[in-house]
Image (cartoon, rainbow, N blue to C red; front, side):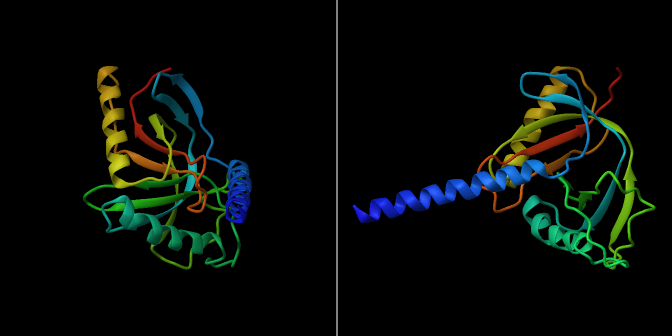
Length: 197
């Protein structure tokens, strides 16, 4: 009986901690966008231009990019720059994955532009402004994996084909949650598209 009470107490603590983490995650500044059209299992969004800190990597899959790229970019925003300045973390973390190499990007807080950000100490990190774009988006929960990314990408590509929507660039995987958040995880695949309003 005592073991049952201990298990119940541990479960309650776990749920409280995860609820606090999820609430904190929702308060993180997110990249701005506007929903243009909502379908049953995907949507069209407009993203205005945004400033990014990006890193190119030789890795060709999610597992190869995620932790190594994150550590290097996190070092930049946690003071690894010429001003030793801390920059707030935002969401999502963006990853462009391909067989020719990959890119990971942190979206910079909207109060910054490419000229106002400190120069990274790591010369492999570059600061740039992403152009405004329309994208098609599909989302999925849980922890991401290469298999989940591929299967959701295939679904989104089929939806675009079924709706006669032309893609105009490579897909990106968007991750919104810290690795220690177990409940309420959000992942997205986006594909740049031709779209007129």
